[in-house]
Length: 608
Image (tube, rainbow, N blue to C red; front, top):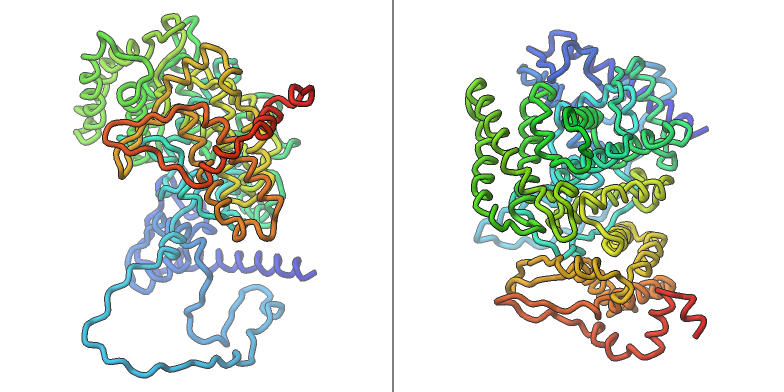
């Protein structure tokens, strides 16, 4: 009964809030109301997404009101605690049924004893303190897969009005689970010179997934229907709990179409971007008889097939174009997996063309469009031969080497793997996890992923999620994936050769150091486990089972790392080896070897 009363009061509060905003915006309190892009009247604006405080502030100042700024202010302050700075605590107004709302408490708060310290003479002015990191962090719009600050765009606002996009609104809700800081658990890969963000990687990873799904004939462009009963859908959303599925099996379309829609929601991709990408990829295949969609140079084809008119505002288009250009530079120039050979001289021409395309946006409309068209034509002539140069064992045109520059491809694959987590509860796997993992296998050809790389990346993603959520189930899933990573003698000769070529140079305080693929992912896991075990009284006093699992993680990672040579570059120091790492080396007795054999091949171990 109390929960029903609370929900009724919340609904009544929201209705009163909309009545207040409608009165202020429709009256003469505001000098001028500037609609957000894409909106013509107030009926096109979702008043639930407008900050009342921002509107009242503009009314007091007697200035103009930009609704786009009011919407941004609402999202920036969503996570801040609600406060009433109205003054008197005896006044509380509701338009509808005010009697049932109750009155504010009349009793005074309990007294607080304040100890006054003796006055201390101050001879110098106190230092200026920086703003609290908690407040600054809470004022950002948060995304589940990204720590970057991201501005609300027009496409995001338009998606709130889409009939089929209520799940995406829910996916932006902040989790109620208390999350831990995992900033010190970082994979040993170099940073991107172009400044690619997590959001850029996530969006490009989804484009790769669509292209691979298109190669199987599962790519269609869905129709976009406008919402007819927006208010009723929002009220249904208010009663939603985080135990509900984002897309239930009964609501999901069957087959690959429904699974791709689930992936779109899981990866927080807007419907507008989804439709643009699907249409662009389908247009890219026009006239290319016998060409598979997953062998396309995806960023280049999207640049050529998607025009500026398909975006709601120029800022969104420039950001999208910049991401595609950065992906081409990172994939083709900065970290190629296949050597350039005689075509190396054309790399400089490619860099110049990328810069000219970006420069065309600052030129007058006619001049800029002409320069962009000419540069894209020249870019295609240079980029396609670079991307399709054959690697060992490839036939010409069989594989498009634009995203297999090792650390770019695993970063993209990492973003795809993050879609297995429930967007409403980061400590759980989504119901469609097995279907998602099977679908991701279609991207292995484009991203150059092997079975060993998949198990390693998946174990890393699961382990980091355990550190963030402290969910024991995630740690057990990570252990299961670590056990599936083949040992060196269990890998085929071609995969051993491929993994040997995957090196990354990371700059550190002591100099630069090279890491193999397995060391890049497993070394941070091992060091984290060693640190926990080094102070086990502190971390495992109340949960011995967790200590057992962390020991398993440390031993599995250590066993795999023993097969990996430590490669040190110029001006670097040897890898620091913790005391617990030395201890593992010393106690690696035949019994421990039997444990490793059991974890990787239980049947063989039992026979012994």
